[in-house]
Amino acid sequence: MKLVYFAWVRERVGKTDEDLEVPEGIATVADLVRWLKGRGEEYEYAFENDGIVRAAIDHVHVKPEAPIAGAREIAFFPPMTGG
Image (spheres, rainbow, N blue to C red):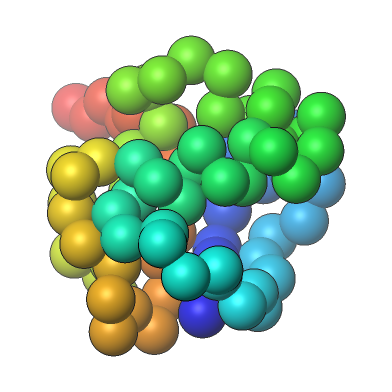
């Protein structure tokens, strides 16, 4: 599965993207974030405030409880404002 990081999430993780084999039992975006936080302090820092970082699965915005089965790409980004 490809993970893509944008804006300050990318800066904190230290990479723009990565291809990972996600372990069995990781079923939702929230599960994935919890697992990523355990991969190192850079991930812990990027995802330190639960609910702030947004996610998209295959270019569709999703909630933390969204299932990740079959996803080709999951992107993480901070909240944005527009005008």
